[in-house]
Length: 240
Image 1 (spheres, one colour):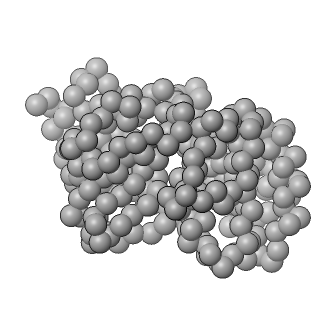
Image 2: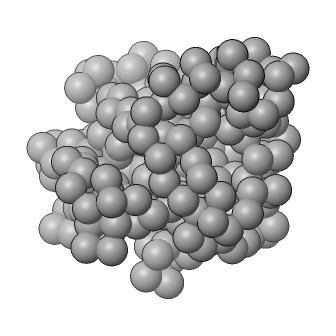
């Protein structure tokens, strides 16, 4: 066992096993993890799991051996968590998810972050690509009494249904950096939002930066109304 592997296992403290694996779309895999720890997890919608990937590859830097993935679903009774992992970045995480096997042990820890469910608004706009789709699905499932509008920009071959087989969002067949087209959709969608409004912006870092500035500077939304989380950077093959 390498020194790096020992360090990683100390940083990523918990263990789980891969109990199910499947392909959801052209570029997205579903990985289900099982652990007794999940039965007692103090979970909030919007949490991530930090997973140790590429542990045995000593050519990777430490920062490349850990990736954060949205929790798509959790079953405390069964002790399982489902992840939907996109592979478009073609980075180490994409390599790991395409090659991992059933029964394989993974090392994880929770990551709360700041892209959590906020139920204080009356209406919501969800904007993201396939990399953020499972995260937005999770948030949407916990807003059953709220108005939720959506703009999911992606090649439609890469999108997938939510865990219950539903398609609650609006999908648009757009290129990853189609900022002008997305802004037009934003201008069409925001007048539909009623009462206290909130937007979740996720996915391509370029889109996140542009839309965050647009909501602040052009639409005059305040910072509490805008939740932003880049899920990947095309220049860096992932952010985490």
